[in-house]
Image (tube, rainbow, N blue to C red; front, side):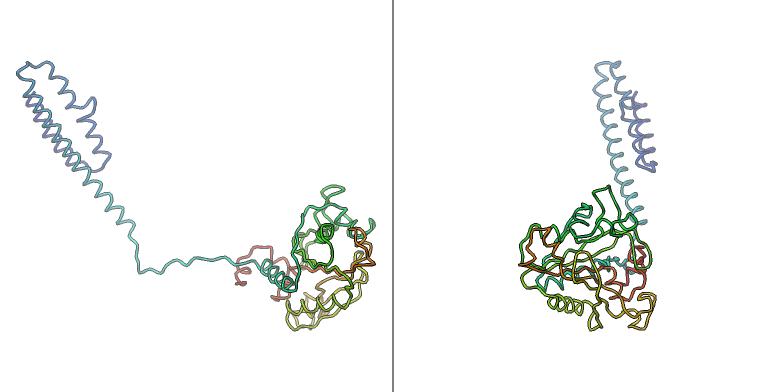
Length: 338
């Protein structure tokens, strides 16, 4: 048995030293020291020895076990160090290479234009209000004095959820909700998304609108013309502005406001349909019927309202001639706005 232990010790030393991986080393450990390992089997056979031989053989087995354990531990450390060095060799970083530049996003031109316009009206004392995009027909049309026969109520101009609910076609319902919960005098604007079934170079099914409302005593057409002229000068700079008579069911008298086309500078182009002018907003004095609908006395208060498309403003500010470019997510287009 002594010779068997000596042979096992010698063979173990050789096999451990020749191990090339941690997995191979673990297989050697199980083969030698496992529950059914070779040294374990020798230990089990000691029960057949005489009482005088057992202590001597036990000491020899323990010395061999200790030798194998130390050899395994040493080889384990060597193999781990070897694997680490190989991994580091593969992960070498050349610190002389230029670093990767982080690509930072920017504010979308629609958002930038909306924030720019909001700040102008905030400086003029206007509050900002918001409301639901899925709106009642009663607030989107009826409360605004829009008759049932008006073309804007057709399914070709409005997205209907059902007979009584629509995707709002304007932010005017926010004005109605605001008047129902506030008493004059006040100034407010309501920017947000609106929806209409249109799609061409100057229309998209979803677009952004900013409407404003000022109500109080002795509000006149001259007041609203002065405020709107001042705000448009701040938005577009020193440009030509003209007011044209128009009709809206919810204002009387009503007007449309044009500015000189920023793309062609008044010479005529696709954007302005060769007229040199671009319609930028609709406006007018609030119709007395609208004031009555929210519980105001038109003999005591008056007001004016206006509305403009955010995309149209952004197009004119940046000289863009196709509205659809804002929604195509072309990085080449968007990264110009930094």
